[in-house]
Amino acid sequence: MTEAAKKSASRKPAKKVEPKQKTATRAKAMTDQEMRERVLAKALPHAAFDGFTDKVLQKAGEEAGATKVDLARLFEGGPVGLVEFYSTHTDAEMENRLAAMDLKTMKIRERIATAVKTRFAILKPHKEAARRAAALLSLPMHAALGARLVYHTVDAMWRAAGDTSTDFNFYTKRGILAGVYGTTAMRWFNDTSEDEKPTEEFLAARIENVMQFEKFKAKAKEALSNFPMFADWAKSRSK
Image (cartoon, rainbow, N blue to C red):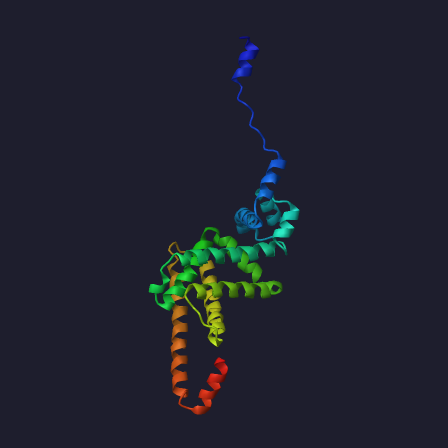
């Protein structure tokens, strides 16, 4: 074997560079849901530093193998559409985890506390990105979307907790929990403790406040039910 042949044989084979066409073909093979999840996974590390911006969405799309046309279709509204998907995707994961738990053996306050803590546990690996998402939704131009997403979240929590109400309580329960979840989330975003005990104590206190209010409301309703005029009014409100 000649010297040139030896050198040629000793060379390591060059790494094959995957053509862009193959990457695009693989991307097309994914469902829209799978592609959204892939883009979100790529975006979260960047969003922790830069927030949810057009630049972050484009970068995540490139890393996920999605074209600009794909991104426009998958995330209407751009970065805000990505944040909306982030929230609903987290809700879905929360529902899956809660469904695997034996919530029926818990008291109602424990079920709600578990639901809130479960959602935080899902968000925790990308806590700063979650804070950035919440900050974006708090802007006046996104207030309506933010309110709708919070409603979706607390509705999922109540359903997982076994709530089957269809009367006026259906809305009051969700309104009250929206306040509890919102204030607790703000506490959680600023909780730098390792065990997050301050957040758990804060959540327990908020739920206790709600339970005390519910007890007061029940007692007041029972006392006033002795008055025919109030009893008739209460019946008309429950229809």
